[in-house]
Length: 147
Ligand code: CA2
Image (tube, rainbow, N blue to C red):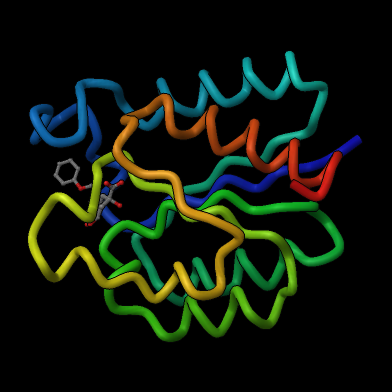
């Protein structure tokens, strides 16, 4: 049975509380529930985490090797700054799907740069919370068919 790790970065624990016009009104707990339900329909295992700390996200990526088959990563603002996360993704040699709730390319210029994109399998952004289940489908499709 395939296993996916869903990793969420800084401030995503605040979802639903502020800026609903940008990020929607769902909470991260709602998103986790959606992902758990979707994992059941896909018949896969799922692990879901959030951290506000760059080093902890690096540790969680390192720990994924040999345990999970693919990673879905919403690195939050670290997307735009973190060489450490980029290097961690390269080192684990697992397929990583970069995910964002908002369309980062339609926002401020500093959000257009992603350190994750060059080492990711692909990027999903702009579909709100639904992006998480889209990313799960993409990960399973990649694992099953290499597509
Ligand atoms: O669109 C996304 O998913 C982001 O990864 C969200 C990050 C942002 O820095 C990225 O550029 C795009 C922000 C995380 C959520 O921040 C919140 C701030 C206030 C209230 C609720 C969430």
